[in-house]
Image (cartoon, rainbow, N blue to C red; front, side, top):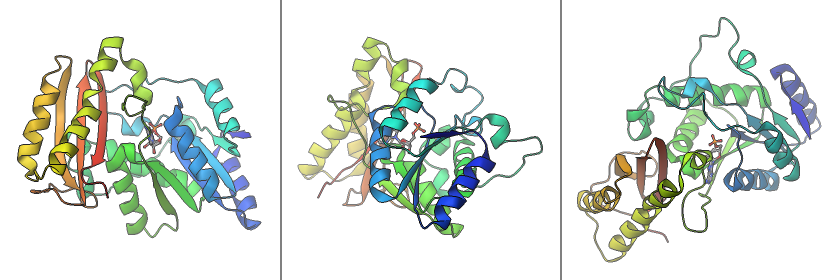
Length: 282
Ligand code: AMP
């Protein structure tokens, strides 16, 4: 596996491989890998000749009071894990390489970024779409894989590639969970033992909501009220949002149907966690 640090080296490698007819699948990440990231890498390996994993903790997508400084990092371990998944390149640029002096361009997807996480994290998605656009231009992949864990991000990236005629296929990967249901996240490392237990309420409320839907309850506002009661029963948990939205437009659904997603964001102690799931599984 190669570790490349500059955009020029990365693009030169990709040009060479693309000119030989070998396809590249990109997995963009912020590192501190867990089994969720590794599953994305394995999916990528099944879709293309080469897997390129990018590792960049992107300051543009963090708000001023968020966890940029403390974001967990372990570069040596991450390199080892990419190598073991058969990754061809780990692209790990530094801040100067991605945002050199004079940098001033942003990519903005409008409507899809306003609800859910966009409401609480202004500027987050513009940071995501800007860095992902840069990565797409630098790495020149045929395919890119993103996790459904960050459901809104996936929807926004799909929209961006379509709107800007980027010739890259976007693949979503299902959420990878711990055996007890907690969605894997680099940020789970922040949780104390008690918070880790409380964090299970996210998955439990998705399951409880699915059960209500199975019993025929379809009124979103009532279902959301039920979920809020579950979440509020944990003193360490503060709700950021609970929403039932259409899987494509991310607009609120008044009644649940086959296209409805339950999306949740909470703070457990100081740690912000998100989760989501379809309410009717066919
Ligand atoms: P991150 O390093 O957290 O920015 O995540 C990099 C990619 O991995 C994103 O596309 C995430 O959606 C995806 N990802 C993170 N956690 C999970 C998970 N538990 N299941 C599936 N995908 C995930």
